[in-house]
Amino acid sequence: MTDVLRDGETVARNVTIVTFFLAVAKLVVALVTNSVAILADAFHSFSDLIPIGAAWLGLKIAQRPKSEEFPYGYYKAENLAALFASLFIFLLGFEILRESVSRLFVLETVRNDAVGIAMIITAFLVSFGLYKYQFVAAKRTNSQALMANALETRMDLLSTTLVLFGFLFAIFKIPYAEGIVGIILSIFVFYAGYESAKDSILALMDAGVPKDDLDEMRKAVLNIPRVKSIRSLYARRSGPFIVVEVTITVPAGLDVSQAHEVADKVEEVLVGMNKVDHAVVHIEPEKGEKLVARPVNEDGSVAKVFGSAPYFEVYRVSGKTRKLVEKVKNPGHKLSKKRGVKAALFLIEKGIDEVEVSNIGDDSREVLESAGVKVKSL
Ligand SMILES: [Zn+2]
Image (cartoon, rainbow, N blue to C red; front, side, top):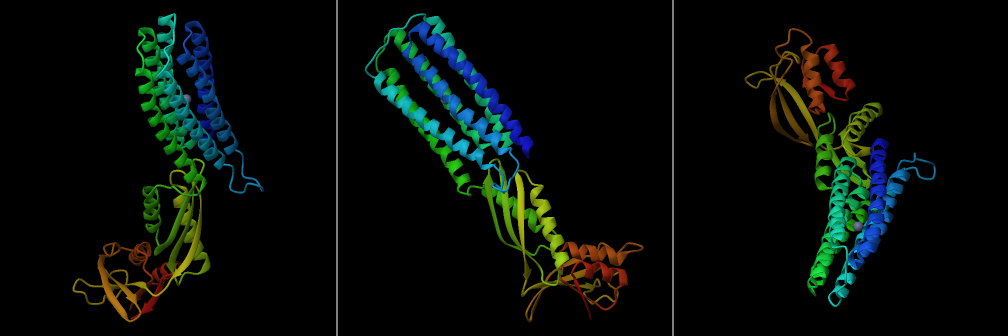
């Protein structure tokens, strides 16, 4: 798990370094061209150092091992860093809005036009590269902090475009246009800030695991032999990871160590899934309803011997009611030996609670009973 965090940390560090040099370059060009727009953009880049620096720190702290004081680990430092970065997107929105409104009324005088335009285009390309780099890394590491910064950097593309307009309008002395473009851009920026802040707040409030992920977990758990149903399944995000709490029901006849085996299997399956850091499994007995299997012949009459029966009929039994659910082929039927064991394992996989037989081999009976399946004589 810490590999993912270390990967993210390296990306955040690289972006911090590139952003710093970009800010310095913008500052120098702003002085050379006398452009207020480029100067504002330079300050913007310096302020960008704060959220990406926070992401760097957040990803670093998140790697600290669990401790007595933080038994769940430090993963949420990452979500906090993301929230921090989101606030900076809002700030950026205000900055662009304020700047744009003031541009409605002022025309600046610039010099060294070519240097200015070259700088703005370079800044645009660098920001685009940083955006792609962070976006891909955010997907790879599932880091919200990097994703928030990637979105912020994408907004930088808009603000840099605005700077280019401003610079060109200043060269050609066209009033109003820059301000109007800027006001529209600020709306996009506010929206990005809102989306990003919402995401990190949801994670901090233990919400926001996508429904698809939850459905995928439910399906995987229900596929585990002897899991009868899921009473509840909760998941929450912690940094780039997910923590799951699940309550399942198992056949009431299982003893403690058999039930524990099922719980272990559920835990193993969940933790094997993408992003899941750990899972807590609670077990309850499945009451009131059970699945009963009986060996039958081709014509539906009860088969004399368990292992060599061609089919099994599976019933859902609840109180006095008994309903035929399905008739399944016995996979052990055609084997030359160990037919009963094969059949027993098959029924265990299907989650059968009880088998009704007239004749069953000792080893088949043992396999069934050790898995918590009752064997009843007909
Ligand atoms: Zn920015």
